[in-house]
Amino acid sequence: MEHLNEQRCLRILELPDGATIDEISHAYHLLMRVYGNAEGSFTAPSMDEFSAEARTQALNQIEAAYAELCRIHTQTQRLVHPPAPVLEAHLPVDGSILRGVRESVNISLEHLASQTHIRLDYLSAMEDERFGDIPLPPVILRGFISAYVTEVGLNPDQVVPAYMQRYQQWQARKSK
Amino acid sequence: MQIWAVGGGKGGTGKSLMSNGIGISLAERGFNVILVDADYGGPNQHTYCGIRKPATSLAHFFEQRTPLEEIIIDTRIEGLRLIPGNFNSSNTDSLTFTQKQKLFRHIKLLRADHVILDLGAGTQYDVLDTFLLADIHVAVVAPDAMSIENFYLFLKTLHNRLLCNVLSSVGLRERANAIWKERAEHGIATSKDFIAHLRTLSSEFSDRLTREHAKLQPHVVLNQVREYRQVEMGLAVESMVNKFFHIPATYAGHIRYDKNLWMQFGQETPAINHGHAFTLQQDLERVTEKILTAHPRGVT
Figure 1 (tube, rainbow over the protein chains, first blue to last red):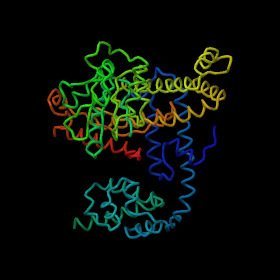
Figure 2 (figure 1 turned 45 degrees about the vertical axis):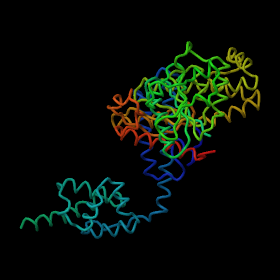
Figure 3 (figure 1 turned 90 degrees about the vertical axis):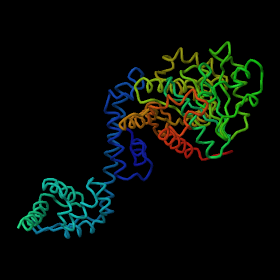
Figure 4 (figure 1 turned 180 degrees about the horizontal axis):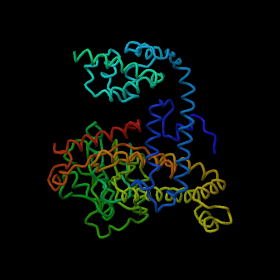
């Protein structure tokens, strides 16, 4: 297998220099849909260029380039974002603590929204504990908070139950 | 002057529509544009322009030796003129070598900012050579397996034609034929090996082929898009052309299918400039803009 430097990896994924991890992920998934599908109507199986070997070779190259780019980004991400602070187990967790953690690792709400596909106003309401502004079943909120804490580098097993307790307390207050 | 060629292999994908749309977009930007109906066997660019019976045509150029400049006619769009195709001719099959050379020479001498060549379907040499004449290559494909398959074949044949042209220009054509016949003895299995072998024979050939290959950067346009998920086919085609044919194609965008377009023809007004085809005009404009951005030379 040829040596894959970062630039070569980006070319394989058909990306320009300086592509973000989001763009890399998007390009990889698109190419996997294209080359992982032998029956797509964009192939021409009768032509030698589209042989099974050529397709497998392209797929392997795409996989290798993506793996290498992910490795490079994981390395550099540690340099860009300081590691998330470790929260003490079973400490009460509220929205303001989550916001503090998010800000300490330099992740904006907009970035978080694009990563988790959660609406910006919901993310903001989650941090402010304005649960009335998130008119969704608790199971969805649990999914949201799990995605949030994972993205900011916390352990969801420790944090999600504590946060959901805050939500249940709010519900109990509301029904009184 | 920039010469555009609009081709793509399969018939009915919208090459004439695209040529017409590019012509209108450029004319609306204030450029002096000449559309050439280079569909030698099936011309109808005049119908797209809303001209029912053009007074002149390429037949006058070929058969009566009328200068090309004199068969240009005005359209109803300011800045957009047309050289109508070769109709009313006794022979529309193919051009002779001399006819083709003469036409190409005269096209290059036209006085305009942009000349747009509307090509016919197929992979005949006339079509390929006309495509290769251009500075900007536009390939129109429809989102179906047949159109895309024909497009790949078009590109592959085009590549071979380019190779033959370069071999002829350096006097290596016959030697190359002999090598190909005895390819097993030379350890040649694929066309890639063949080209690598030929490059070792002559540095002049190698340099010229590299230069000619570099000029071929087709813009792929996906026409007749009916569903959003079809758009991804354009990206897939772009990727496959790059990875499997090693041709640096770029996806210039899609044109949505207009179910009412058929009603706009046969009238004495341009088909896509009636105020009836808003999405079509928008899409053609967006695609033209994207292609123009990739060729920032503008007027030369």
